[in-house]
Length: 177
Image (cartoon, rainbow, N blue to C red):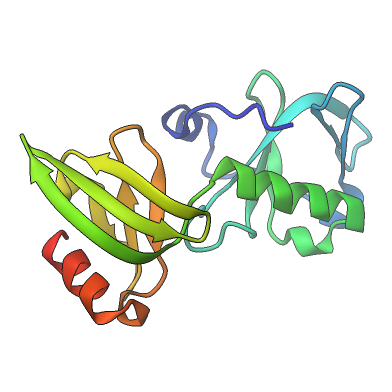
């Protein structure tokens, strides 16, 4: 159902003062072709709409921007838990798909060759290997002990709590920040 555009293209469409929508009056459903159909409090219906979390890393299930198919900003839902059950479930699923970020639970090995770091890790989705070009631009803290790793393809991986990794994984991570 998700027909999202790259992250870089979204920020230019978000205004600083999106209208805050009353989630009790918003309905979000799939249409017959797998697209989102957004019904706003004024009764207008927008088929092919999109949604994006304002804070995809720290609060991806709060503050959700809604857009029309032509990327016109429709509004902001501050707390999607106040949506009706069907809309809420759909919104939370869409948010998870928009920002698919496997969680790294173990780091087996990181080695560098020709300026590229090769990571071999275990994630909540299983074993994974990826490449990182620049540590300074691709591996960084997004909280006290939380790390975000961006690979050469733009995929993001997170380490939820560096302190919870096993000792060897933690050492490897710290050497590659």
